[in-house]
Length: 252
Image (cartoon, rainbow, N blue to C red):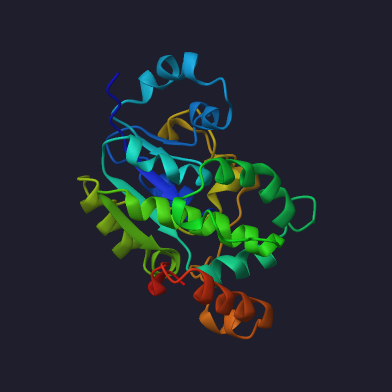
């Protein structure tokens, strides 16, 4: 079965749900992580996969972050949102989950096994022996698989959060879509109002406005200075440059 979608990939917690939400009225259906995309994590997805994905043909799909290794499997234009590695590590170190605990270990529990199963060949001989190094591995695995794919617009998160309209114009141009006119959701925490992981086309999702959280326009930006004053991040960056010379320095 031929399956043709415009795709959004990402390194997680870097603005991809907001990008998808801003695209919701672009003229074609937009979905964020519909249930069939999570079937990739299950060994028994094959018998039902073609049946489930048929209705999404011709749509824009935001995929779960671990699935960058599948980016070359589907034709169509692709958007890849990523944080530079030091920004990614700072985000991971400072995130707080809903129950008030750091999500570093829960993210490893959820997606590390998938990354090991689909490890990029360039990373197979490197020992990632701490929790933060495992997060480096997952980030690098996404970067390397996307580097191997094609027809991609790479979008660095700080650039997106600092220049939403200019970035979205580039996104629309790459996806061959008209430019967005409605930016009313640009400073809303869209995950909190139900715009993620849904089988419902985004323009038909009823926002849970009782949970709305408005954000400063610069929310999401991680400045270099924050990372440069974190000695643990600096040590890890030295380790990466020594052990992973193949990673493009502009992504670090």
